[in-house]
Length: 281
Image (cartoon, rainbow, N blue to C red; front, side, top):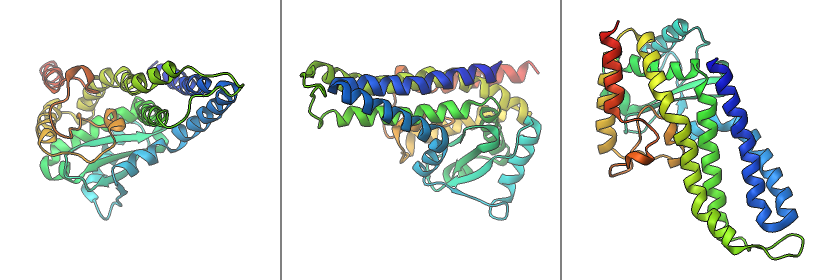
């Protein structure tokens, strides 16, 4: 059932990409409409097949071998076996901000990535708990839709900025509506955030719960979340804001993000849910 719902949401999101691109292109008339359709189709291909590579490149991540990180690989292999999925590729990012994410279009094309800061901050049990959370995302097939959402959000924001420099002119000789262009410039970044908010929050609770089951000790994940959230507020992360829905905790680039526009549930609520899970075992 979860797989069906995620596949349905992915299909809707991919269709929305084309619809949005065509809507933006229509400001420039019939020719703009056709260009928008072509742009949307290309974006679908890029988002489906290459969004994981874009996300990993954004973090400056590189794949690490079992010889380079034997304990990390052992954890990922054991958790994948418990979850009943193929072993994902393992990546490490040199960022000092402690965080982690999973990506890939399916369990057989998945990857997990942890930062140097996370490995330095957490105990082995807490690292394993974080990896269990990411494996849960892969098991639930959350990674495709979350990575596509990040790619789409970036594309929407890029198109919004481009609208500042492209004259609004109908392709059929009729003048366009400058107010429509202004509306898109103002609303498109908000739409990108709304897409991420609609996808992320409930999935984090589900991945926390399943991650606690896979790891076997929900409190290890609760302790890890508290540490990661605290240090993320103090150590800025160099990242694309459009990919923030993918990380295990909200990345911060200075200051406290407003709760309304956070792509993650409050850490305190996630910890409370994990504590309740531990007590109910």
